Image 1 (tube, one colour):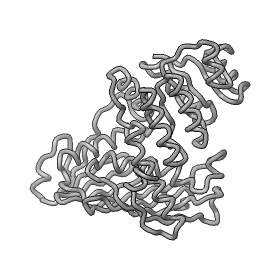
Image 2: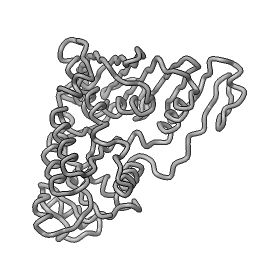
Image 3: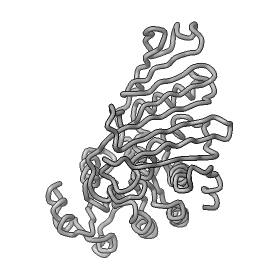
Image 4: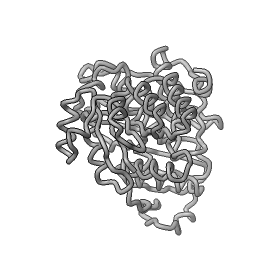
Length: 348
């Protein structure tokens, strides 16, 4: 299938290379409001000047045929660009976050429903081997009913551009990955209420808050604590973060791309398929995958279109992940007050 990419800046440039090495998609055209940049990128990747446009409207007027659009512009422009593409009849793959606000996200969902087109959010962290492994183990009951999740994320990325000017850069641009992962790897964890605090160290390169702590309560009463930093001067985690998941039958530790199971019963360490016992714990082999990260996203996007179904990270589902982020932002801005997630999803 043929895809047009809108936005060819820093992260967008990486998307181009991902598309070009993918077997499901052919990059047909690049679109950027900076037309000279679009033309330069087109030339760099083997396209022609005729394959570069300053807008989606210009591409349509040139009668370029594509099946889908990849939206890789800054989040503030997601809604306008995505709705235009959906109304023009294109399936849309949208870089996370889906939108700046839940209201804008609902606008995108409504446009996708009206156009009967797919709107998928690129939550690429779901498509990693470790994440898939953890989700499988939890689904198989290795830890029983999950009651406690602790997530720690620490990085100090040398970003420039729009992220430095965001009010809540960590929560809005990074934590969406981890909070979406929470919903993905622990499917029974249905978020109900959130409280959060956020702050910015004096040494941070960001104008807004680069650090946050988020407490999430599920409908069943299970708890998740997320602590994140984009200005860490301590040791760093992987981009996935460091996870401790505890349940009625044991625990899972996921850190540094390793998954370790710790059954509550010593007899359960005798055998677990694909695991090696070490010091009473089980080091679990990661599930095999030929398409991880953004390659997995592109494969799922193509499969969903071919099969006429919603993709795993469909915009409808992603409303809940975005609601977790918005609830955290609201709570942090109101002194850590409790925010109802379900109310946000359904009424804003």
